[in-house]
Length: 81
Image (cartoon, rainbow, N blue to C red; front, side, top):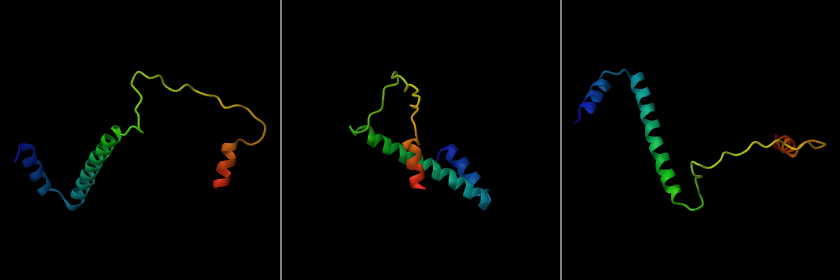
């Protein structure tokens, strides 16, 4: 076993139950990040998903058009509620 793993093993032995639960939560988060990474790798080769190049320009700000009546977006929100 490597020195880091040995130190980790020794430290884990001295943890309380509460501290061990916290360590397990951190481990679960780290493992879930690995899963997300594999998903991104799988999507990277899918032609349906395209990542814009770093030198691409950001979207420009657009001001909404002023119209009479209630905007459609507000009507949709009210309808959903």
